[in-house]
Amino acid sequence: MKRWDEEYARFCASTDGHRGSGTMMPALALGLAAEAGEVAGLQNKLMRGRNYSFAEAKEELGDVLWYVTRIADEYGMTLQQLASENRAKLEARKRAGTLHDRLAARRGMVENCDPDRED
Ligand SMILES: [Mg+2]
Image (tube, rainbow, N blue to C red; front, top):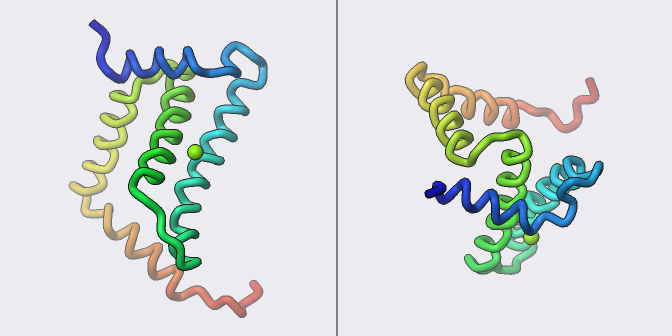
C-alpha cells in the first residue's frame, strides 16, 4: 500500500496537463511562483482593508502543495523526504542556536536599512 504522499503525487501527475512536454518543468516552476504569489496576495488584500477567508487561504496553499508535489515528483523526491530533510535542517540550526539569530540578523538589516542611501 502506497503512503499518502506517494498516492497524492500519482494523483497530481495524472492531473498535470504539461506532463511529458518539453516545457513541463518551466511551467511547474512558474506555476509555483504564481500560486505563492496568490498566497501573498491574500496579505495584500488585508493591507488594502479587505478580508479573506480561511477557505481562500486553504485553496491557495493547496495549489502551492500541488506544484511542490509535482516538482518534487519529477526530481524523484517525496513530500515525506522533503519534510523530513527540511525538519532535520531546522533542528540542526535550532541545536546550534542559530535559528533565531538569523531572523534577528535579518530584522536588524531591515531596521538598519536607509532607504535614501544609494550605495
Ligand atoms: Mg490558486
